[in-house]
Length: 303
Image: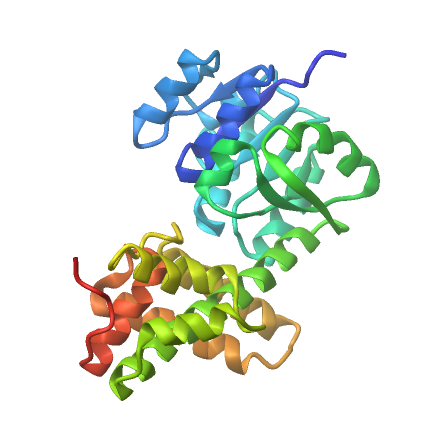
């Protein structure tokens, strides 16, 4: 059978790898320019077609993928000037892989349904490295039939495709996943500060954590990478400001249920503090640098 025609918006760190896997695996692909044209030029060279507007992504395509920063950007791409909604035809599937807000997901789904368009929440996990390798994890909120239609397409850039449940459950699963991840990250940074202030060897802390049940991928991407590479804080390529946004979405969601979110609020405020201290554009492991500044202690090895 012919492969579905795909539109793609959001050619950033994650989106480029996703789109490249789609086009190199034979999917007809239309793309819009990112603020940096280099990823687009690479995709065009691989066989993608450039279009001038979000509306053009919807015209003549079967599926449109969104991979943008958050809820405001999702709304702009769908409902803004020359947005997808202005050209979407009955039967189109819009797959939002962004980390958005559940309320926005519900709004987009209900509005597009009036045009006979499906809006599917399918946020991602893992990093740009796995995006390029086609080994992302994805959490899909959709009915069984829609999930079955999308699964072969998602396999072009995903290793693990999780059917989270009905529409809306993908984004809920993602926010809870990110809450746990950032809780580990903020606790790790705080623990490093306590160790350094007490004069405890960070190498010994790393040795003990690595050998026990407290160990995690997040801990190794932060502390393991920092110690192994003498101060490298790029092990987890996700900015503090993006993490702060995700935790804000999580605490909003928790409040809407409502459910107690004492730890979630604390994690969110830790990320807010790091951003206010000037580390928002840095990767999550720079929470350790924020702890240095807060506590007046040296943690990160130099050189």
